[in-house]
Amino acid sequence: MGLVLGFDCCFDSCSVALFDGERIAESAFESMQRGQAERLPMMTAEVLAAAGANITRVAVTTGPGTFTGVRIGLSFARAFALARGVPCIGLSSLEVMALADGGDGVRAAVYPAAQGVYGAAYKNGETLIPPSLLSTDDFIIQLPDGPLTIAGAAASDLAMALGERAFASGARLPDARDVARLAVNRAPGENPPHPLYLRAPDIRPPKRALRAQGMLPGASA
Image (tube, rainbow, N blue to C red; front, side, top):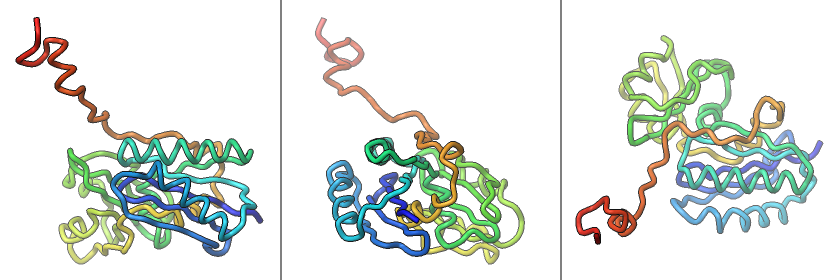
């Protein structure tokens, strides 16, 4: 069996990993809020140099996440797969976090967002709540009764709100090791590497440009 090469740049980290079907052959993980575009190619070269390059498929997180991070990861992964002539698998960052410690039972992932949380939930690997942007209260209402494991940067707060039935796992960010592992048995056609954006981009023109267009005080006539 060949190797699965996984990537993630969705949130405040950058990671690359190779999975051989039984274990992680090599991996690299760095915390960073910016600079993924520069580090990802270098990290990939380091991982491939250490573990070989018999790659049969590529996998990458599709979001939700930062707009820049999602685009960097997807663009690099798709280009790499195209160059190697291998399929590229897309996985939600929330699914990767939720299933990082296993797929049994009910598992959820939550990550802070400006308008609430990004959240998703799974039961025995099947989707219960698809990746969504919603308030914490609305997410809690949709969760089933009974014990559950929660991952993600907002896991501790949600576990505290749910009480004894909830356990916060150690997965706080997506990791390429889990991306590669989960992608082994995924069908490429059913898991395309398309971006998953749950909110509109928070992009605003510079004030200088707005003034030039007469949209701010101080604009020239």
